[in-house]
Length: 237
Figure 1 (cartoon, rainbow, N blue to C red):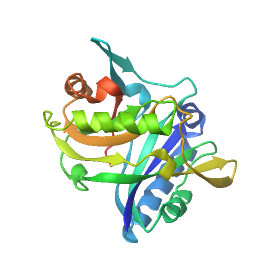
Figure 2: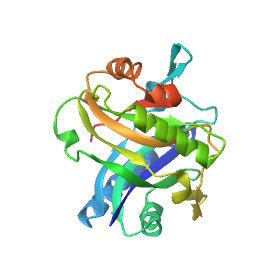
Figure 3: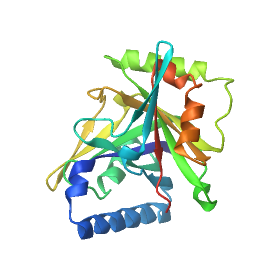
Figure 4: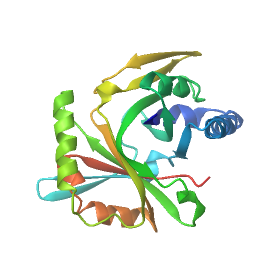
């Protein structure tokens, strides 16, 4: 069995304009989807991101560190949820992703996990859990991989992330799949997906007191030299 991260991207503005009852029903359907996947043995972990307007992006520009408040895109699209699953192939993982409840216009990216693990009991303790997404931008797949390799190499031996409770590095987008929703129809496309200015290459999870603590750690991390860190708190289940 291989491991995959299913990453849900949503148009936050479209979700905010939905009827509250419809959104509550969607959340319940997502919870049922996760529980069904867990009961069947394919789901190892899952989580929902709080709104991107509450998040931060940290990047280094020359000798200056920039901390950018969310939201981060003009079109309202943002990371919304993830599911850590085990499947025989990317095709099998994409079939799991196709059952994830979403609204029209939402996407679910299927990304193979190169290495790492997540503490599945991270929600069992009190406190805030933050996800730190490692982002890289490049015009080509090869350039993006080189950026991720530099980040990986430079992060060896660095100060550990306080309260770390897992993390993964993702395989290049060309190995992935995308489940796109148009109306009531869903279609599965092969990668790569480099149309975005910044593509996620990995994610770390940490229990911290506040997003400010996460930002302070990020300012000295090599991740922000070659790319950026998007810091988002997870909803407590």
